[in-house]
Length: 244
Image (tube, rainbow, N blue to C red; front, side, top):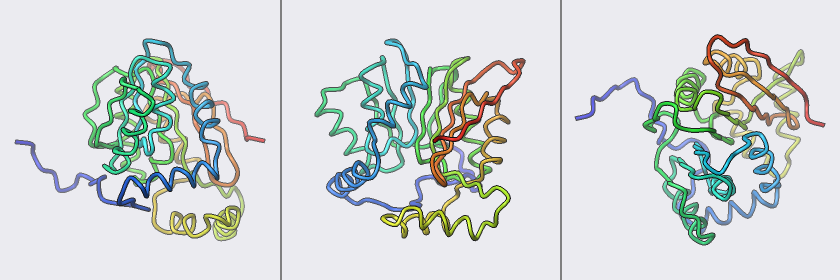
């Protein structure tokens, strides 16, 4: 019988917007594709990962499964996790439509997945890590580091705040006004979710042993990191640049 710990975070508790049906997820998928170039984002991720035909990939927070399906066409196997069963149902349907049989969709998240050690060549997470407070982000990142093969790649996209030398109130006002079509959702995100700051995210990643090979800001609040799991004896070198 599994031991119960009352201090363990329940990552299946809903945070942010929930979807009650496959039809609602399909509508969400359409809205996102109208706002973002999802295919271009996936190409950028795949370019960072450098997958080979025998590669094994883990995606945490697969959502609609768009990246999992793109990766499955290039590598041997994809394990795709999500805490939303409705999202997983939609993602599975889309994978079957594309006749992709090398994806395992699992009802799990950052903390609940049973991570096998040194198994994956790459781990990907897009717009999901902010569902965890910083202390649990660190726990999740340690698990991710341990499941990667030495030299494996972790690609992270998330909402990361950085107001530099300015005032946080002015910065957050600028953030919500920068996306008028999603103003209410961004305002709710700032008020209720757990996005952290750039300097904390850098500290979390390097604390567990990742070398940050690229750190790119996209607009006011999105950030992408391409990180490598290296032996502890290696000296980390971080290269940062701002997207034009």
